[in-house]
Image (cartoon, rainbow, N blue to C red; front, top):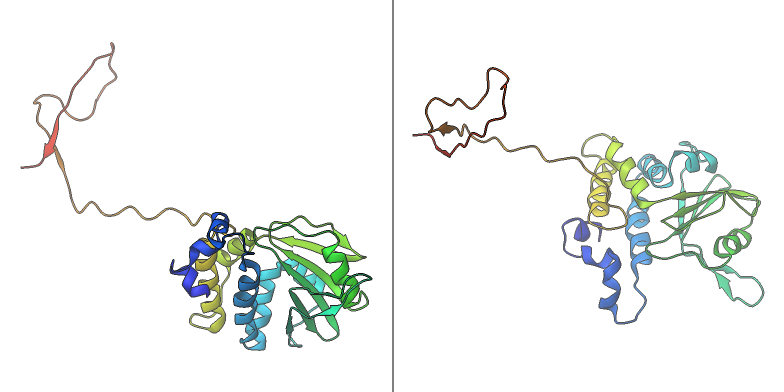
Length: 236
């Protein structure tokens, strides 16, 4: 799916105005993004997975998780956890688990958090093992959720980090970085300034001033303002 968006085959699905194309139905943007982004990471080697998750979460949040390169990171997609009274279950988007530590990741795309959404997820997952909560999207988040440090990481933050990221050329992590950046650049949630294109070589084009006695520059400052009219044409 990342490739389909990056190559502009389905990029319209991830822009705000795409809502009208679903005729009132809930857009599956968040679930599709979660599956594509984290699903691709789950297929990597432990070393590459460690690097990709660090980019997604951001260095501060990743450091707070306590994850280390020595222990692999498991990804649990939409686990159904026992909910509070009056609610059958709670479903975080992603639980990242490694060596007894757990990070809760909530993915948002053109959507706010619901009331106590993160609090219920942390309580359901068990605060004793959770080391960090990451809100991946534009929704605001408090500094702490149930005593656990929480972080907001926008998709533009991720795109900016991907622009600076490096990995061995042609490695799975390098390919993932390139594809992720291309994907985000085709969405209104993740697009960042990518610099100006190089100016094309004019291929030696030249112009000729046809009015004699008036060079195209002034070798001395004029004492009085003058109006000089030039006509341009291709060199003969």
